[in-house]
Length: 321
Image 1 (cartoon, rainbow, N blue to C red):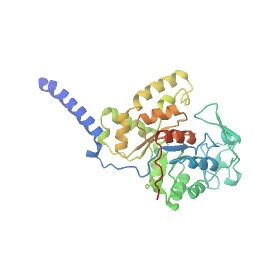
Image 2: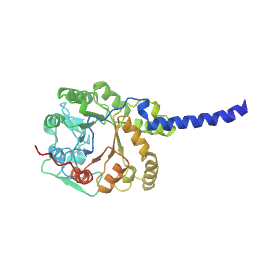
Image 3: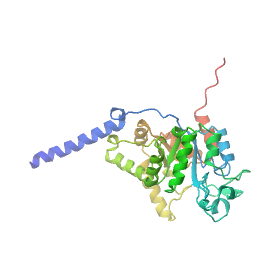
Image 4: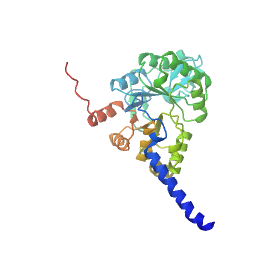
């Protein structure tokens, strides 16, 4: 018995590895694959918060002038039940008023500060003449066919239901993406409007990476359609997830080794998942992301990314009639 196991176990292990690699490169043999309904190259973070004040209509209009493929937005709910586009629940950083959005009616919301530091470009500030917070409904109405990612940060069922209903009422469920860091929130979102595509949560992202390294990823279903992932090389430069310096260095080294795998990105894409790296504001980072095979990049500076894309992918001249 022992001699049989001595030869059988390694043979089984080798067969498993070969099958895993085979199906990793050929997912169409196990799963139905299709091209994305709306390919994304340029995604505007917080509506394009590096060039105008974040999440204002002026920032969004500026991003759309740069032919943004996706608007990344965060939503909160006011006391009178209005869904507003705001990254923070507390208004202190954005306006100087130390109150939560849900403690005020929409008409009571303060103006944004005259300048706001760009989170992923420390020491740089955005300005704009438009300082008003806006309703998600207004953005949907003005840009009815522009894909948008709507992030829900807390398990607020009223907010989730209102976003779901807005997407339905504007007939844009297919181009409005559910995004959240938390699994528990995403479950509520999917139940509220299952027609809206989902992005990976943090836990689901870790799970997918684990399956990839165990060789099991080709054999499991993937309901998500978007993988929004930070680019590890920006840690210690523009993104500081930990207050301790050595923790940032360790995080950068580990995540760079784990995430920056072309075979993983290619497999997800073959399974109908678009991979976007965030939040990149420099041309060298754009280059790294696209060289890895990413579908697109999320940026605070849509003009800079548009210049990069036009330089790399010049549009064909219009045909004469």
